[in-house]
Picture 1 (cartoon, rainbow, N blue to C red):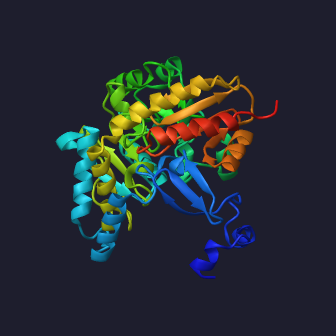
Picture 2 (picture 1 turned 90 degrees about the horizontal axis):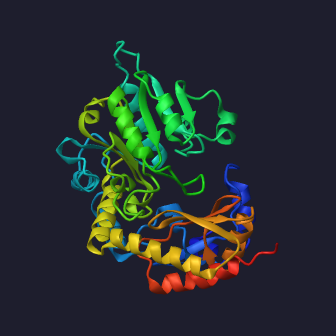
Amino acid sequence: MTLEETAVDTGWWDRFADVMMGSLATPSVMLDHGDGCWVWDTEGKRYLDFLAGIAVNSLGHAHPALVDAVSRQVARIAHVSNYFASAPQLELAERLRDISGAGETGRVYFANSGAEAMEAAVKLARLNSVGPAGPGSRRRIIALRTAFHGRTMGALSLTGKPVLQDPFLPLLGHVEHIDSTLEALEAAIDPTVAAVVVEPIKGEAGVVDLPEGFLQKARELTTRFGALLILDEIQTGVGRTGSWFAFQQHGIVPDAVAVAKGIAGGVPMGALITFGSASGLFQPGSHGTTFGGNPLATAAGNAVLAEIERAGLVENAARRGEQIRDGIRSLGSPLVTGLRGRGLLIGVGLAEPVASTVTAKALDLGLIVNAPNDSTIRLAPPLIVGDEEIRVFLDLFRSALEVPA
């Protein structure tokens, strides 16, 4: 079947079930194209996209800066393997080092996704194994319950969700999950800990904020005991929370930060940025990838980061996030119990476990949002979102919240 035929085919549900692996549920809508904060399905219906591919489409859809950069790069050279360097690769590494504040000692490893960035983070933690009692005495990795870091085996080992882990046991050893409390953090960390891995905001758990002072305490304790502080900013990074990275709002510097999702505006891309002495742990041959950091993906990343900076979209995320929160409060819905997150990563807490009903009704109305759990609606619109899109969102969201008791 040709692309043109697919665009008008309404029987794609059967085709999806016939050819796609069973790990994916059949979607309710087949999207065809997009423009800015809007997308259209194959039947011509328009939707306001307030999920952005789960915080991926930083510039929205079909942004000229990204379209131009990818078109020019693919016409020049798309892939060279990791045996060779390319100008876009080096430029993006320098950009990431600059915006993260890693400075001259910072280093960048490029991958293809957030899960791959976290796999690199797991290896980095394992390389920090020489403790006070000698080589191999520092092996424990501390992660948080209900956190999500990816579905590959290393990333899944860090993910604090037994329902996702249990079918694939045994996972990596020496990974321990603790509650997201200062008391649990202090009790867990000692000289045998190689790394503490934290999402600054637990996105898949329902956009859950960490307790006040948690990241500062994690930095203090990891520094004291020689452990690495590794931050998973796959969902919170690249300006989404109103700063380039969420950790920058907490006055700390990590040893490593994983980034993906919004970095290349929809082109698959992940990276691990290291700081200070952690930059010396990887040596030639200790990790690698064929596609990671290829010219096409890194050209996309450069275009996205340059446009975010040029258009002031980090500041826009902070301002529009508050505007959306104020707007939701003004709706006066008894179903809304609270708002979580920062910038344009927003969790709307619900009084009843009806999140899936709300998202389904929203989709029917022409609004794309997400339910990470039964009592939370997640919002992650493109960083370009403006007054008109927010006005339409609030009108549609008001109707979506009117669900039967």
